Image (cartoon, rainbow, N blue to C red; front, side, top):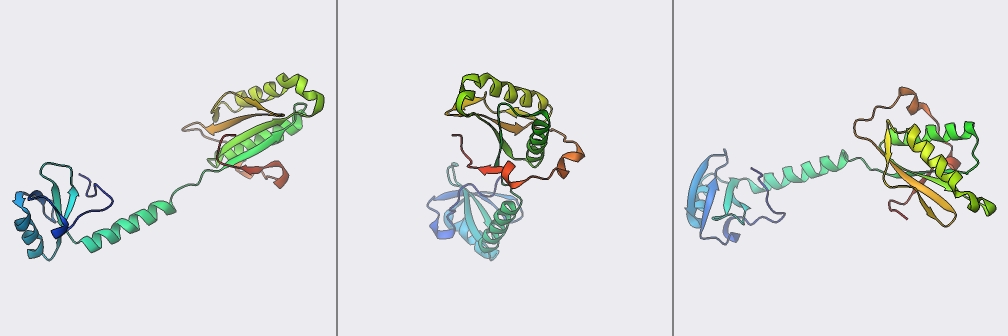
Length: 199
């Protein structure tokens, strides 16, 4: 049973119910007691009566050291924030007439970003008359998606907005990347952080 049911717990005389179901500091059920008897049971142990399930009938209260409990909860929250991984969106830009070498080079960067757990936005930029041949850009995105199929999947089909066609790639659960991926260097002009929202 979760010790915490709400972010703001009522303790001792703040509890409004006349009767409460009580769990002592060792996890034993003391049964349903009047509020006064429950508070007295907590005070006899030099502890607090804390309401942990206010919507239950009768409400469930636990006997514990509320100060220590709040401190340990704050520490747990702090620790969980330390271990959170921040996922960024990385962007790789290509042209519709990209050479094979450049394509392979940029595909390597996409794999590296994916191996780090990031989402990757792959953008094909069209200029001038290239807008009449958007299928070339679509072919590149389809080819990249197929090449990376063991590692990533597109969030949505490729989209054309203005002079750019793009697709977002996300890591497949359980994907295992080759060791060589981690050693790919990323020049600043080839990789950009993008805002964490679909445009």
